Length: 238
View: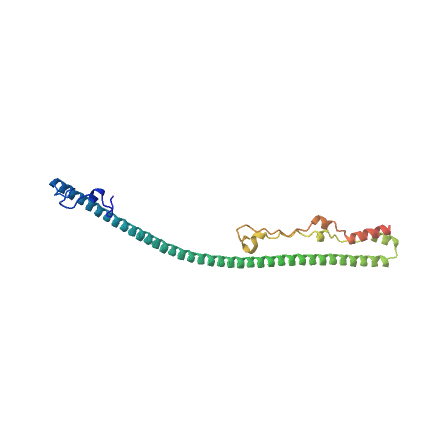
């Protein structure tokens, strides 16, 4: 497309209106050619100017559309950021609430488990104390019986009677029934503490080892001091 500032070579060499190349009057054909050349030049200049206006208008529309789209995206991003901030606050509050709930529940379960452990240990110690009391009572009764038996023998003067009484020496008390009391019921499983299943913070079950049971075999090997003493006394008498 030709620029209006750059006229064609043909128009630049054209003679003035009504003049021929030799400064003579133009013929009708030359006048028509000159008119057509000027018309083409004017049309090209108008087209170039219109094209320039279209280009400028398109640039303005492009800038306006891009600015509008960026503004729309900025408003949408702002709403998204505001909504996300609200969700962040909600999540933080949920974390705080759940942490507090888990801490309170954990403290309650620990307190209940400690109380159960203290009760179990107290019951075990009370059982041991009862056992000691029963053993001491059995031995004291046996000693009283032996003392009375020996007093009777000491009061006898007939050897035959004494011989018969020796055969009736009271046997020592059997401590096996005291040493082997009925086995206590197993401690309640740790997963049933406080009527609910112990669960960790991440959902994994917490296993608490059961209290070790008494070894009945080792307890059974405890020597009977009364029986041993009586056996030694009999051997010494023989």
